[in-house]
Length: 117
Length: 117
Image (cartoon, rainbow over all chains, first blue to last red):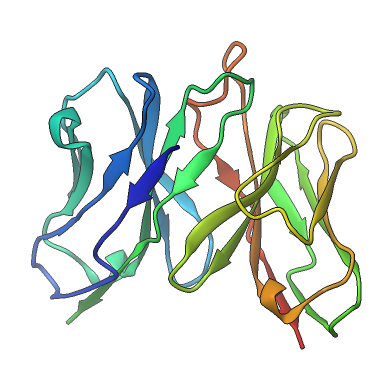
């Protein structure tokens, strides 16, 4: 069965600090996708990034970067020079190829990031 | 571009009452999902539907029923509401690339906040 663990329940940083959100996953499939979502205080869920199991290249998008390591089953998310607007709950999720035409997306329990001035 | 629309936004029920949460998407997606979000539990899958006419149980299906009315609409019904069903409910959809959907991100509605007293 697939499982996603986000051990950090809550993180508080001061603006401009760098912060890394950890995500560890379990799966028996060799083909899968990993995702990160952001949930700001307004409550909507915003897709940030996906990564497939065959692509271990790190990804950078502005102040955001993602480090995917199959050897440790981790897909960590780093925010550089954090800003107050980054305050949100961040979810990591896993989608296996599965055997059907609609596979399930399994979410971690989320990490609440609080960025203060 | 409406995306995924959920109604109602808020609802208060008494124990034992029934209600249906409505969800519609206009992105021509095949797969649709219902999740519930509870503090410290992340997002848990209730039911999902690969295509019109098919539904499958997720992680926490007890106490719920679903109907995939057509390609656009996927409703969630609580036949006899219980306080344990107090939660925020999210509907989501995603496309199928070829025959499989595991590689595409979920698009979420804005959620329904349900309180059962």
